[in-house]
Each structure stands twice: as C-alpha cells, then as structure tokens.
Image 1: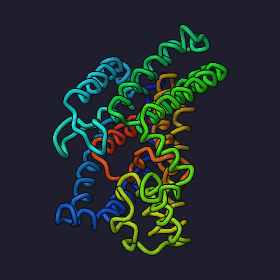
Image 2: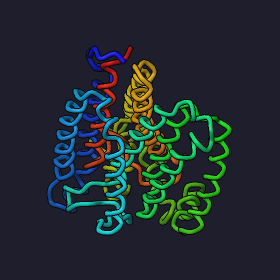
Image 3: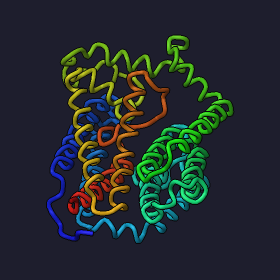
Length: 363
C-alpha cells in the first residue's frame, strides 16, 4: 500500500461544498414560511442547518486527514456501538414523524440508523476485504455479511424506518456485489426480499396505502396520494427556469416537509428544470469521482469503503428523487447535503471526509 499522500480529489470537494451551499439557500427558501408560523423565526431551520453544516465541514476536514486504514482497526467497535444505539433508541428513543428513531434532546439528538449506515459499510469493507477468496461461497462468504445486514435492517424496521433501512440494505448490497459475490446468489436473495417486502406491507396497512397512493395518487388525493400530488403540483409549474428563488407557492402549507423530504420539489418549482438539472449534475460528479476513487484505491479495503460511501449517497439520491417525481412510494428519505438535517448531515460529511482521504492515496 502506498503511503505517499497527494492532494484530495478537488472535484469531490467542490461538488460537496456547492451542494451544501445550495442546500443552505433552499432550506431557507423552503422553510421560511413554516419556520415563522411554528417558531416565530423565519431563520429557524436555516440557523440549525448552518450549525450542523459547520460541524460537518469540521468533521470532513478532520477525517480527510486521518489515514483511512485507521478506521479498519475500529470497525468492530464502531459497528458494536451502532447496534447498542439501535437497541437504546427502541427503549428510550424519541418519537418523531411516527418513528421512534431519535436519541437525545431536541437539536442535540442523533439518529442511530444514520450512524449505522456508515458503520455497516465500514465493517463490510473490512470483513469482505479480508475474505475475498470466500465471497463466491454462499455459506462462508455471503451468508455472514447478509445476516449482519438483515439484523441491522430488522432493528431499524422496529422503529419503524423503512426509508433508512432501504438505503442501508441498498448500499450494503453494492459493497457485497463489488467484493465479488455471485449474481445468481444476489438474484435469489432479491426474490426472497420481495416476498419479505410483501410481508411488511401486509403487516402494516399504512404501507399498503403508500403503495396504492403511489400507483394512483388521485384515488385518495387528500390521504395517501396527497404528498405525491402536491409534489407534482410544485414541479410542473416550474417549467424551464422556475418561478424564481423564494417564489414557491407549494411551501405555503400545501407540500408537507418542504425543507426535508420534498425539497427537490421546491428546487424544481423555484429554479425550474435547469436548477434541478444542476443539482443532479453535481450529484453525478460526486458519484463519478467517488467511483474513480474506489477504482484507483491502493487496497481492497479502501476500494470497498469508497464504494460503500458512494452507495449510501447514490441510493439515497435515487430514492428521494424517485419519490418526488412519483416513481417510488413515499419513504421519508431526505436528499443528501440538500435537505434540512442534523446528525444525518454531519455524519454524511464525515463519510465524505473519509472518501477524500482514500483519494489522497489513489494510484
């Protein structure tokens, strides 16, 4: 392994900071009305986002300068901490948005499920890098990491938080596939997963309503289809150049969660197709450069860890945009670096810092 540092990938830094800057602007634009109505301060969500963005940037530059193989030594400890927090949140966690997914008080809270996404890809990178010759074996190579991912997903579903659980599973499968797992094994497991998803829908009627609302939102326009309809009402009038920054109509208590889950709807309404395309282009640049880091990493651990971090970002962007434009059922997933967030934003910037450190050793 080369231990000669070079400069970190500049395009990852630029695209990350630009997305973060756009996020700060759009969080204010999307939330000012709601914040003034709820807290008497139109800057409430912006102030909160700015604080966590600053903390995240500090964490990014810190992890960017910590040799990434250092994390390999602590992978088991970090994963164990994640499981402990997932247990604690079920016992003493706060309920927000219908899910018992927060530890802490107010703005100081943390979502263990967000922490677990990074913990699981870190451990998988270590585990699979050390067992590359066994990954084609279903019992010895594939079953152990799948059991680990399945247990994590099950604990997150107890909150319940299907969206975050889906991102965790999606990013994990990407890491496992890149590590060399057989496609036939993964396809078989995908079929089992579909059966499990059907079971989850049957056991929770509200999930079935989300599915039916996604397939035909106009069947229940004031219920299960409301969010998708209001999102499309925002995107449609945006046209090519948008209504103008700050001129959204849907943020006036029509579109639920305009500063979080559906912030891309507000971007499309105010900045139009061009503004939305710029955001997607920046994500594509970030993902492209991240994959390049994975390909040129000096060892298997760095490669798989980079893939896992980019997998978290890519899967989350895909699900969020898919929900906003009506391709997927509503899952409660935020848009990385853009949506208002606390621990999720800081942890994601921390992960990008690790990715940048890997880029410093790329061949």
